Every structure is written in C-alpha cells, then in structure tokens.
Length: 263
Length: 372
Ligand code: HEM
Image (cartoon, rainbow over all chains, first blue to last red; front, side, top):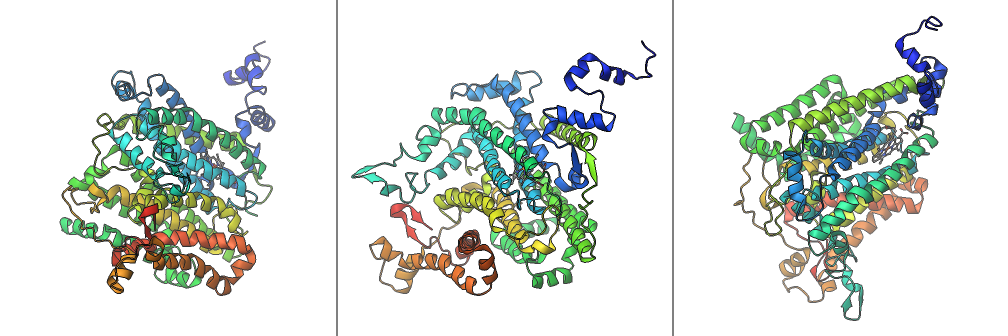
C-alpha cells in the first residue's frame, strides 16, 4: 500500500476521498489539474481559466477592484460581529459602542470596520482611476463602467449611513450637515426651488414633514427615526443592493471579454 | 526660518492663491493640446513621471506633512484619527498618478518608435489563473489584512461625547469624502452644491463612455492619443474633488473660515461678510434706482447671463473649434458634453467672482429658494 507511489504528505491528502469529494481534482500540479481546479470552484470560477499575461500584472490593475471586493467582505464580516453588540436606539447606541471597546475582549472589530470602510472608499476611487487611465470604460465595457459608478455612489452612501450609528457628537452633526442638503432638493425638499409649486390650492404638498429630508430621517431632525432608518439601510438595504450589483459587475467583466486588452 | 516657511505656506494655501496656481500649472503638467505639450517638454515637466520625479514628489509631500506633524496647530488636524485616510488618499493618489502617467509615457514612446505597447504580449501569451493570479490575489489580500490590523490596533476609532442635539460643534464637518461638496457650499447654495452637482457628477461619469468616442487606447496606459479626455478627467478628479477635500479638511476651521494649516483655529476670527448680489450691483450701484419688487424683473440680468452662459458657447463652438466633435457625436451627445463641461467650469468661475468682486448670487430669488 505505502510503496505504491512515492508521494509526499500533500499528494496523499490530495488523493484522499475527502479532498477529492470537495475539490474533485488532486493537488493542482499538472496543467490539467490547475485548470479543472479553477473551473470546479464556484469562487475561483469568477476568474477565467487562462488570462493574457498583462492582466495578472499588479502594474496594470493595481488589484484595486479585487481589494474593493475584499474590503467589502471584511466589512460584511466585521459588521455582522458588530451587530451582535449594537442596538440602534437613542438609549443604547452610544453606550453599546462604548462597551464594545471597553468590555469586549480583543475588541478591534469596530476599528477594523471603521478603517476598513475608509480604505474601501479610497480603493474604489483608485479602481475607477485605473479603469479610466487604461481606457477600460470604452466599448464593450460602457455598461460595466456605469454599474461601477452606481456602486461608487452606494459605497459612499454605505459609509455615510454608518457614520451615524455610534451616535456621538461627530456622528449626528456630520449627518445633520449632510441631511440638511436634502432639504434643498429641487421640488422634493421643503426649501428647494420649485417645491412651492407643488401645491393643491393652499396646501403645500412638500412641507417640513413631508419632504425628502423627512423621508430620509424619519423625522424633522436627526433623532430616533433617523437612527433606525440609517441602521436598516446600512446593515441590510444598501449591502443588499451593492451585492447584487457586484454580481452583475463581475459577470460583466467576464462577458465583456475579461480584463481589457490592447487591441 | 522655519516660521518663515510656515507663514509662506499659510499664505500659499489660501484657496485664492493655491487654486489659482493649480489651475494655471495644471495644463502644463497634464497638457491637453500640442501647444501645452511643447511647454510641458520645454519646462521639463515630463520628468515628473520618471523615477526621480516620483521621488521628488514623494519627498515634497513627506516634508510638508512632517513639518505639519511637528507643528502645534497643523499637528492637531493631521493627528485626528479620522484624517488618517486623507493622508493615505494623498499619497496613494500621487503614487498612482505617477505610476499610470509613467506607464503611459513609456508606452507612448514605444508606439512612437513603432513598437508594441508594454501590455501587448500577443494573443497567444496566456498564463493560468492558478497559480499566477491566485497567488497575487492571496498576497494582496494578506498585505491588506496586515495593514488593516496594524491600523486598527495602533489607532482606536474615535468616539466623542454622546450626541447632543442642542450643542452643535463648530465647525460641523461632513465625513471627509463629502468635504469637497461641503466646500462647494461656500460658493453655491445647498440645492446646487448638495444636490445638483453630485447628480451631475454621477450622470457625467456614467455618460463618459458614451460621449468619449475616441476608440483608441483601450487596454493599455497611454497619454498621447487621449490627452484631452485624460486632462478633463484628471482636472475634475484631482482639483475639483481631491483638492477641495484637502481644503475642506485642513484649511477650514470654525465658522468654515479659512485657516492656513499652521494657523491656530480661533473661534474669534471674524471674516467680514461683504458679499453682494448681482442684482444689487445692477439696480442699486450702477442704475441707482433701487431693487424692483418683482423677482423676475429684479434678477433679469442674472437670468440672461446664466441662459447665455449655457446657451451661447455650445452654438459658437459648434460652428468653430468643435465642429468636428459635433459631427462625430451628433447634436444630443454634443449638447450633453458641453452642458456638463460648462457646469464643471461654473464652480471655478463662481469662486473667482466671489474672490474678485464679492459676488454672492448671480440670480437671487430667495422667495423660491432659487439662488445661483
Ligand atoms: C464597489 C466597488 C467595486 C468593486 C468591488 C469592483 C470590482 C471589480 C473587479 C474585481 C474588477 C476586475 C479587474 C480589476 O480588479 O481591476 C473590476 C473591473 C472593472 N470595474 Fe470595477 N469594481 C467596483 C467599482 C467600480 C467603479 C466605481 C467603476 C467605474 C466607475 C468600475 C468599473 C469597472 C470596469 C469598467 C471594469 C473592467 C475593467 C477592465 O476590463 O480592465 N468598477 N471591478
């Protein structure tokens, strides 16, 4: 049995029934095994099996799209952990955050989440920058660029909605500054141009309690309603949308012919 | 000596001066036309994208930041945990600007010599994703994880006093990535700075692939055959976005007043508000008859100016310099391009009107919140 083949530990693991049942090929040594390994894995199969040589160069892609995605995953995981401890109410939000750093052992999840979010914003900008500089938005990739722009916007919104959750001075005032702009939305904000035109007789349709800012904040100022809305958007609503768009984005990178190549 | 330099940098950072310098220097650094290209070479600015140029830029930024860290006032702002990302942003934007431009210049030279671009290995030169890509991804992933861990262990996330709706901090700043927009609030009302401009940025970015019909240079770095589009994009990204974020973060203190980076943020600093609406200039100062009561009559000059600003240049340019563009893009897309470009230029124009003649609004109809 043992001398059937001269094999190392790795190869014998690769030959085992458990390994084969999971990965279907042995340890990827031969060309065929490597190709099948990529094809068989749902995760690796995001990639094609073979790529033009320049496409794997760090100098070409800066790996920024990949890092944006990785940071999104880090944020999802650390965010889920944070949700175990955090209650989105005016009463508890601030103290829960405080406990997070003082009571929870090895509590750097909040740091990972916050700094990771900043890093993701930067990574997404740089990814757009590289896509622009390589002219990769040109046909046939126009649509994927547009999908990217929406994800950029959603990334900023995710960051913005998360900013409120610690419920400290920094949070509510930054969100107040931001949300006050909504008040001035043309037609939809009660201090926006054209809002007064939307009236039936004497009754203004767009008022302080019915405009877009009110819808955003769930109230007339940044309070209980805003906290809950931002929490739901931040933890469920926006990640849901951006995850779907990422699926579209990655699918389209493949369907548009893979990483752009000189023509 | 050091104080002299700091005082000098304080003055230099004033938006009036720094922004003007940047606008003036920008086309020589990223030359959009052959005329600028000639000067770009003559002034030796193409050397910025060599290894040495990159090192000099790196050293320059580092020296200023070091000067800042050891300064009592600038150090306070730089040391804020939430400002760390901006420092990372500054370094990475410069680094990747350098990287992409130097790759582009190298490729341009290759093409000028009739060679293939660096990215072009021919259709048969392929590598396997396992291991060539998967390993790179794994290394990038590990490095990023280490980076995040070090950052997170080294720098606790800030938590200020509990929220207090009745005590507003001064200045109340938006998160750093929106500070460009908040900086625009100095020059435009919220409906423009906070709603219309962001919308136009998103629309403009999404429209980009549909209006840039230059099919050249996709899939490799290059500058020579798409200089105009690179110029416009970088002007928007670097000066109107990144630079305004830097201004908003480092140079704006209490009451959103300007403070040089080495200046102390004093709440007591009073900047007289002497801004005047165009209608007052016209009716009160020039015609000396007082403001008419009907808003549309009162603002007629401003309205005409705005309409002409968006209406005249497209027509004139379509007959003159940009005739070729109209033919290539068709009327609709051409109109969209010009509209977006004029909107983008409206920001610097309004800035200069504010700085030179203290102009508050070109059109001021506060009755319906319509101020431009
Ligand atoms: C949420 C953020 C985003 C994620 C996770 C993401 C992810 C990716 C990944 C993994 C790739 C493969 C190539 C690479 O890594 O460069 C890619 C390609 C691409 N991305 Fe994104 N992206 C994001 C945002 C954006 C944005 C903001 C834009 C543009 C405005 C954009 C436009 C594109 C285009 C056009 C490609 C194809 C590039 C080529 O073929 O060379 N993406 N993206």
